[in-house]
Image (cartoon, rainbow, N blue to C red; front, top):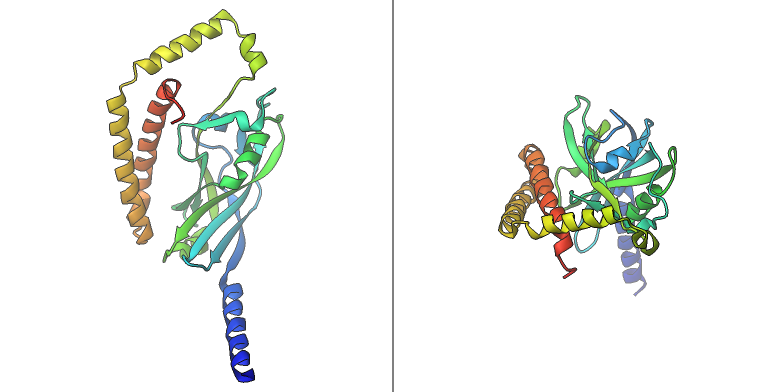
Length: 255
């Protein structure tokens, strides 16, 4: 009995040691630029030009999961939304709020990272602040059973801000009540635009985007580097669908 317990304890220690030894790796990389290339968000924030911490994390479980995470400091370049609750700030047009590309020593893209979902509220709070305010935001990419993620982490030498989404804020009740007639006219005009949306075209755009996304994810899961070449077209299709959805959203219920 004692021998069995000892063997079990030894096996448990070995498993714990293997998990802790290869589970995390960290290094520092620098930005190639500070401004995002597109989107309304780029008018409010930029990357602070300083070294940032890049981390590779591997978690074992029913499904092995790997993460590449970059801790980036963002700075407000102008005053943000006032008299607005952070949760009332909306991100539209892109499926991701902002994209940062990891690049190798030659400046070639290695992998793209998106804002971590848990840091979304932190970004919303930043956008209610003033010019010069800063916040640390984590950008990450999640992998399941990948082969190339550890190599991508090693290859990453710098990072480049890329796409960002559009930003809007819901008006408070008091603001809505004091709206002028011109605001109401603008709202009516927006609704008319929504009513005239070609829903068949919107659904076709969505179907094409989903097909491209599935193809992209299959290639990425297999470690097919040609997926990198497909990324710009995928983002273009996402922007096209996002724009159509934005025009039509006033005419849609939550369901």
